[in-house]
Length: 169
Picture 1 (cartoon, rainbow, N blue to C red):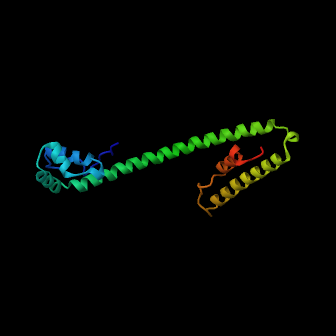
Picture 2 (tube, rainbow, N blue to C red):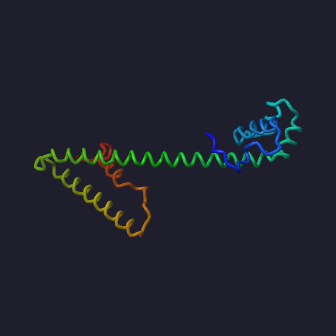
């Protein structure tokens, strides 16, 4: 992944920078940060380590490589944010579909045949979900709180309904 070049891209070939020196810089720049050493470049381009250090100082390799890393991180961060947004959209659609399926399944259940514990559990879960949704929505709309995604009511209810939760549903 490479950042888009711009007029200020210090990792690009600098005015007056010989092609051979820029090629050496690109080797340095493209090494993983923890392994970025002038000696490695010297070995790869078959020059003395002293000569490679002179080039690195004269052409600000360290600063330019750091700018490259920063630009790459910005690109990676933007891609990660877009992936998270996409994931959230998929999860929202899947959640809605699950609610529709659950509502359809609930409509098929004869309440007279449900054990009293299951009826009470459904009532508790439904009330908790409704309360959580309404409270969070009102508080968020009023700007009283920021959204707290750490405890999703749907996730909590799904966990409570899972066979491992010991529910009698």
